[in-house]
Image (cartoon, rainbow, N blue to C red; front, top):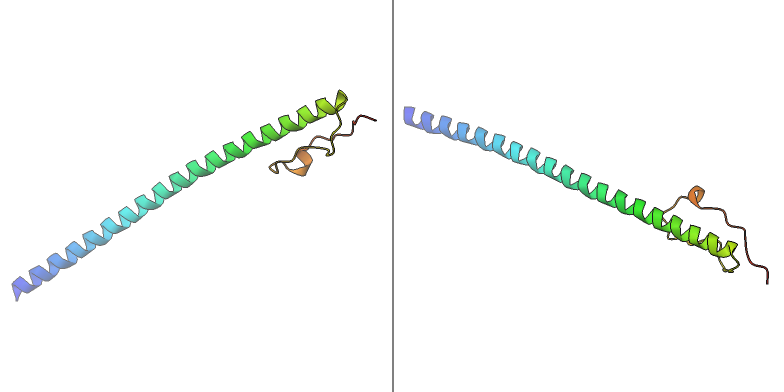
Length: 96
């Protein structure tokens, strides 16, 4: 009977260690996932900022072309990453 109790205690101890280990592995996985998400989010924000700069440069080039006499059918180039308030206002067009 004592042997059975020892085996049972050993089993419970092993089960507790296993649960602790699983909890630690789960926490580590969650932390890794958060780091990966943070890195991905950071990279995406950086790409969005790059696209905004490119779009603003495109609009600036358009504005300069329009100022120096080139006519375009649209008022600005829209990639779609800028907020409407970020668009430069264009009104200069060549009169034909």
